[in-house]
Length: 158
Image (tube, rainbow, N blue to C red; front, side, top):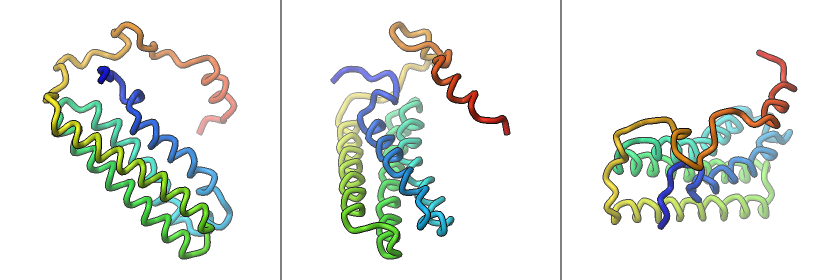
C-alpha cells in the first residue's frame, strides 16, 4: 500500500465527502427545511464523518487515528438513523432512502475495514515533526487557487 501523506488521499474520506455533497440538495429541500432540527442534525452528522477521518489522520498515534475512525463510523450510523426518520416523516421516497442507505452502509464497511487494517499493520506513530505539508515535495502550496478566490469574492463579507 502506498504511503498516504494527506487525508484527502484516503478513499474513505473521499467517499464521506461525496456522501456529504450528495445529501446537500436534499438538506435544502422545502420539506426538510420545515424540520430545521432534523436538517441541522443531518448536516452535522454527515460532515462529522469526513471531519473525524481528517482529524484522526492528522493525529500522531494509531490509537488516536483509530479512535476518530470509530467516531466517524458512529456519525455515519447516526446519519442512517436520521435518514429513516426522514422516510418515516415522508421527506424521502423509498428509492432515495435506499440509495442513501446503501452508500452509507458502504462507507461504514470501508471505515471498518480500514480500522482492521490499522489494527494489524505496524504503524504506531507519525513522525514527530509537524512541519507544514507544503515543505514536502509534490504537495500543493497553501496559496488558494485563482478560481477559488473568484468564487469566494462573489459572496459579501459577513
